[in-house]
Image (tube, rainbow, N blue to C red; front, side, top):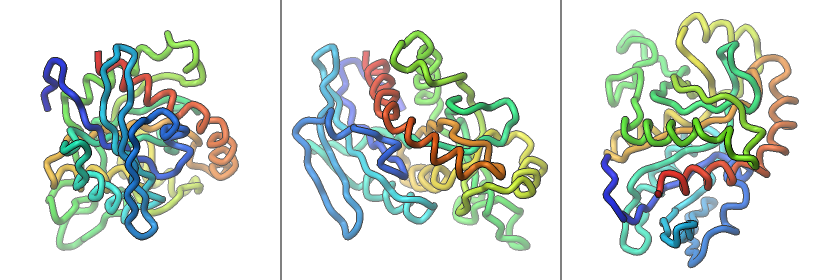
Length: 256
């Protein structure tokens, strides 16, 4: 995608849990609420420091690939102020696979895949039959813009909790991984894998098939091992106070 000077952006913002978008609704004005069964969608204006604004349509999908795909589809189909979304951002937490990663490190995914996709013998393992690919790649322009912005967060005092910034492969599956044997198997099958979660690749597939640029940002909450449950719950309590601050900083930064 290409950004134009003085362009008003409409950004689709998605997370699995309320904690992953924090107090976003407190920062939006002219909010419109849409309800679809047990799914709620919010659109509003975010006033920027330069007195410009961006439009945001945000939602919490719930856990898992089906819920994430449903939410992504709803957001992509939503217009606000007669504008469809320009791109889709998924933000949240993930379990580390790479031993380099620590809690509070951030990964921006240049590609995603489904680690539980297996249509053998009709397709090679991990290939998604509908698109005939194992991996789905993020929009290069978005990737560079967000990566450049994230590399500056160590200069922002109120974002001091966040650690190092990484860029690479994130894998999605309908399971919360807290087993060393499963983790070891994933490492062997997908050597370049950085982290695992439960929604990203489903969102990316919907966006890819709908021709919508996307990017996924994940903060490491645990090491996807035997301590993952406790680490995850403890981390989430702290993360919810900073999740929106991180996203807002990025949106402000890329809008100048």
